[in-house]
Image (tube, rainbow, N blue to C red; front, side):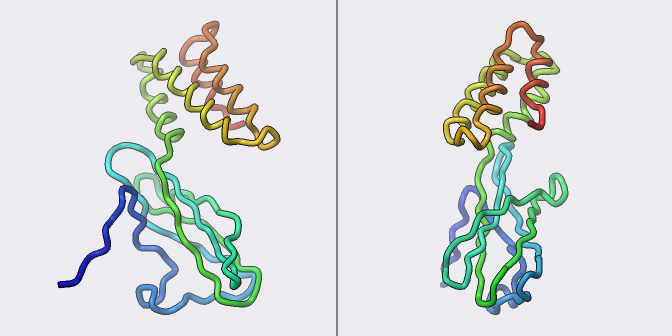
Length: 169
């Protein structure tokens, strides 16, 4: 009897490019951009996020490349990456729960409907503050702290507080 590899809470399946189920290397030329795709999902309603990490021929991991959902609700994610030197490159797909995306989705439904707006907005403020703690000052920490402050601004309506916190900046 053969053992099946366990599947984690956030499975990453059907990773491509793959030749002969990953038994042979996919090939590209130096400077050629190619797409890495994978099926990424989890149980429940929480949102997920994913990225691709290329490793150069020396085994050094490069910067991670955020993946995007290819079609909403499809669980297929993709990102374009480029190998910039000759040699055997490898890549891996990483996935995790995305509490900010989960909160943004939930808040976008509950706050306009008037369902516990105070609680939802406070949860968002705390979430943004926790996220800001891990961001260097020069990399945009202030944007997250401004969003948390907007979520707590009692001078605004709940919908306006939410809108101020969801601006693209």
